Length: 165
Picture 1 (tube, rainbow, N blue to C red):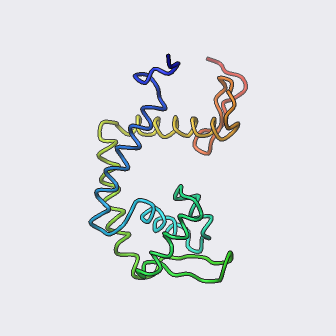
Picture 2 (cartoon, one colour):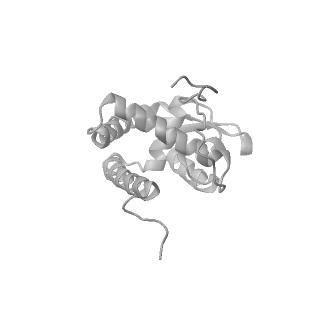
Picture 3 (cartoon, one colour):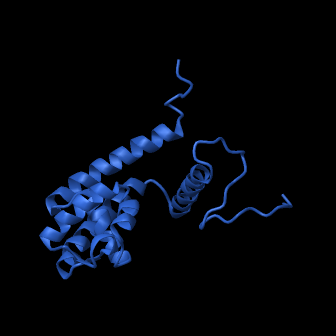
């Protein structure tokens, strides 16, 4: 018998949500000629030009080998350009990449808005903060159980040591 009740498992709920989000993103990006990792790569380059293969792979949640293939495709289509050689190679969005990225960004923003449509601004912020807490708990001691203490994150500074509550 399993110790996880999937009807109340947060991990299972997160997986269901990410699967639904990914399916919607895949379907919406397909007519634009992009995959979700390609779109993520273009967004990362627009945000910070000159990233390396490894940096792009980490940001797009793919392996370096997968990013290498992805970048080859984007280079061939002219959406990105590179400077340097080998491990020193850096990638930037080519002028031809701005229009597809703008269309893809608008499409993904609509999907995210659809996903969050049942949440007001306060609940959206709470969800973001709570997900940050969950991420930090897993990154702090991967694979280890944590105490009930609330970890800090950029959006969620540590709680004061004493409380008047």
